[in-house]
Image: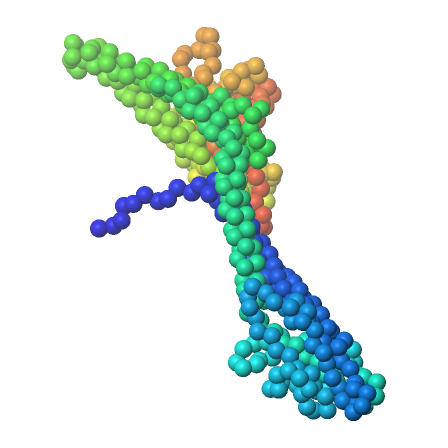
Length: 492
């Protein structure tokens, strides 16, 4: 059975404590190594100074006999008293002359006297009877004696080592106390430093209410500088979320309102069918109205789905944009709209570059096709009988859809991109549109990184919609020129 134990939640305080204590511990180790060398040097020099004093005290008592010229020494008690310690180290000495020992320990190792300087104490480490010893030696030349005299004093090193161990133990305890105390202080300091985050959490929790949450920006006055970018990003997210929720609510309200109308028509005429039957004139009229309502409902649902796809969260400029042949897409969409134009008695014309070259644009071909399809559908649906719709593709790259219908007043051109907004035209029959066509065009243009502009058509009649797309890098390829128009009409 798989282990279902929850993953450990990372702690910012623990992470900060680790980041601080790891280098502090490394510094303590470095100080320990340096302190160990310093302690060893200090203990060595202190004991060597006493050892040198004892050697010098003996060397000062060297003398030459008047009668026989022999070297004599009167050992002072202070020479060995200064070396006494709690460690009870053993002390050895000897005085040698001409290869023989005058006094002291006969088997204490002798150095090379000829290589030693005169009246200078020299230290060396040696082993005596299996124990490490520290030896201080000094060579003296006496008047009347041709050969130098060697004075040596040796001391076992147990006391030195014990003192070094004690000092190192105290140093280690101090470093452990330093690191441990620092950890406790840092833990508390980090907790106090993170207190603003707890206050910020309480502010966010306080906004939670039954059935919703306030999406107003968080206050920045009490936010530390280190987390200010995070809070600013959260405020931006809250603003976008508030905008998205508002858009969704408006869209839902408008969509429910728009769907209510054809459904009411369906219910009304179905009731008429039950009353009069399908063979009466009233029944035939009701069936026609039901069919029209179903078509309007179908178109509304298609447009709602198209608008939902256009509103999907997607970067405007992808990292690797697709390259689309604008000429090919425009010709295919225009050809698809020809049957609808024939049914409305509208002529569709296509105008491209004179040399017939393809125009490469950065964008998805399906999105470009949906954008142009909605523009053509609007131009055909709201045109007059016998009118003309012209599709132009030109360098820029630019795509234009122009009609000679009633057009849109300049004062209304900014609002026609709103969802479910429809123009009221006095004296004209009601239109069957849902008011979503240009809203879908704007949403698709935003997805493609394109711009949309509305102008009056030729000679101030009709409407011309200009879409400026993003050009793609690369060379254009040659395509045959194609002109589309209903049978019996001239091509543009």
